[in-house]
Amino acid sequence: MNRKILSDIEPKNVMRFFEALSAVPRGSGKTAAATALCVGFAKERGLRYYTDSTGNVVIYKGGSAGRENETPVIIQGHLDMVWEKEAGSDFDFETQGLNLEVNGDYISAAGTTLGGDDGIAVAMALAVLDDDSLSHPPVEAVFTVDEETSMVGASALDAGVLSGRRMLNIDSEEEGTLLVSCAGGARVDILFDGSLTEAGGDAFKITLGGLHGGHSGTEIDKGYASANKLLGEALATLYDNCDYHIADINGGTMDNAITRECSCVIYAENPRSVYDIIDGLNNEFKTRYSETEPTLYLTVSPCEAPGKCFDSASSKTLAYLLNELPYGVISMSRNIENLVETSLNLGVLRTDDATVSATFAVRSGVDSEKEKLIKELESIAAEFGADMKVYGEYPAWEFTENSPLQKTMTDVFYEMYGGKMNVAAIHAGLECGIFCGKIKGLDCVSFGPDILEIHTPRERLSISSVERTWRYLIKVLERI
Image (cartoon, rainbow, N blue to C red; front, side, top):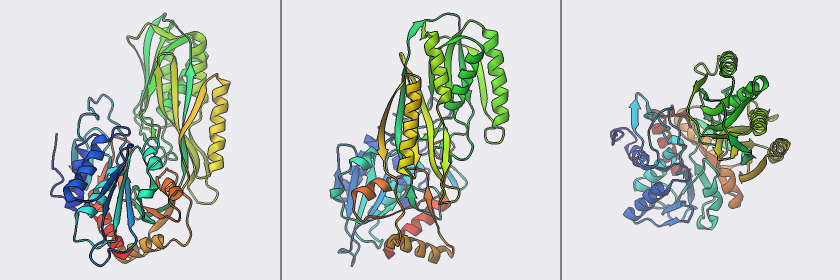
């Protein structure tokens, strides 16, 4: 495993902390080591800190000389990352640090996600806390957990431990863009309980893979296919033409990542029909997604399988339920050009004994539209005799007019780069909405360096963009 490969890359202090963070497991729900790293950092430097039972950490540092009595600024990011790896990889996220690689201007991780989202925020905040030469007001560095799954960290954090009323969220992936609004969202589970029976016929594994994947907030409108959704269509089409029993179906690992691969084990009496139908659908899907999914494949092959499967009625109902479930963009904003207003992503399918669960990330910039979409899912679930639960709801982050922080950010950007900063809203969910709901009058922005193809094993972080964003952060801290 590579270590210290970033030590000679500027900005060295930022890269040092990013590499240290990359060496510990920190998937959503598995952030104890990252929490410990931050607490250890604070203890080593004699900085006051706060941590809670959820795993959130706040580290405090006084203002630089002459700025001790200024209003604190909050620098915020999340500790957890999305765990995605290439098909067939034996990499163990729970025990191994990432295998970092440097190729030209980009840092990536061999065969896995990089966690630049949002490790770079943690690294930059630690670098600020570590550098006594910087000019800044008192700093409250807030590191939350489980942003990628439920935002439970931000939701659970006691806002009473913060006195800052300005917040720099470093959880954006496009340099030169200042985010000032985001969608709200929720997680939705649809739970289908079927009846099991003894298997009969031959067992086959149907696999749909080779897809692009991506972030279900920022890339839901790019035309990428969902493996879970397409396999549902394939199973319904198959049932229209031959009888079979579903034994197991699984796809995806995160509700907010567009699923790259899904597989289903079935038992069928007529293998020839299964092969012919799947082969035809493979050609159809390849044609349909020739522009956005050039490596798509749908295959079927004999396999070994457990002796239990869903009975005929349950298999048919499940196949048609999966086909009926919506996916993708539901509506575009009527106020902001090219902004998705409402969407949903069927990110995870899981089989556990006689229960199949379908997990969605639902997003909307309009709370009433989010609730409308959840009601639609509830209606579909009821139609097919499935249950549903909603959890992890978080509010939209609404645009604030006449924000002093926004003005400072755009002014500094223009002075440094001679160009106008892009002030925008985003369809993805950010913790800013939760913090704005907790802290009255909070002035909040989100920004960050260029990170490409997040939530996929192709994720990569631009080195030159990190350096520019770091210099920009330093200048902003001088100015606010």
